[in-house]
Length: 130
Length: 195
Image 1: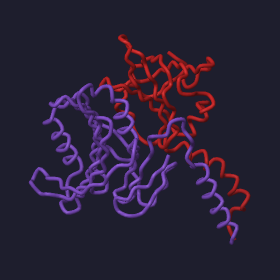
Image 2 (image 1 turned 135 degrees about the horizontal axis):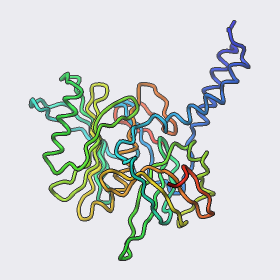
Image 3 (image 1 turned 30 degrees about the vertical axis):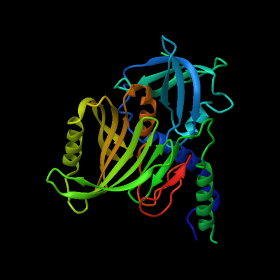
């Protein structure tokens, strides 16, 4: 006979699920290529939201002087973290105006680690903007 | 079935359901898992698997498998070299690989990095040919793993968003390890696909 009743074991399920969902984003890598001492604000339009493991991605088009657009890839957390902070397909659509704060890549490439965003409805998600 | 087995089965089922892939607005990029060499990475389209060889600093040719996609002015590749026939020091092998990238251009960023429980190096290289490469170098399970996203001229900076996603999505997979949202298939070199 088991030392632990079935109900007690099943009671751990929600915790196990939470840990399993959070783990890929929390433990995947070191974010070394991002300069976490700097925060940059991007104002642009949403190209795509990819909710994918181990990290989701937000693609944002930023207009430059001269009429061209630069595409930025912004690394999000894992799918569970993305949903938890309210970043869903219902909240964000391609073409939406968005302001995003990121820790930029050290080499000046068009990419960064997500810090916060102001959604089209004015809702701020992530950390409070600096 | 005993209560303990029932609980274990229920736990596995719920974990599997919770890790089911989520939908996305634009879903070109997918996670591809290669359990035999032991890594997973996101590509914007299915990669090709090629067999090649890698020459060590001592001149020994070792078997290398390349997972590669050439698309929209970027060459995405993960090269896995099997060092089981030539036991090597992990740090020295990584350092030698890093040095080889420096010969082809100017290294603008070189930094220690961690993926899962493995430590390696990540680089940014401006090539002598005007290209821009985003690189990750690791030595895992007796294998040298070199990820390169090489954005070709002209204007490689314009494609750096894709190179960033490719580099930052690399993860290592232990034998039998379960990755959220990534399906696994058996067979050397055979990819599994997740979203």
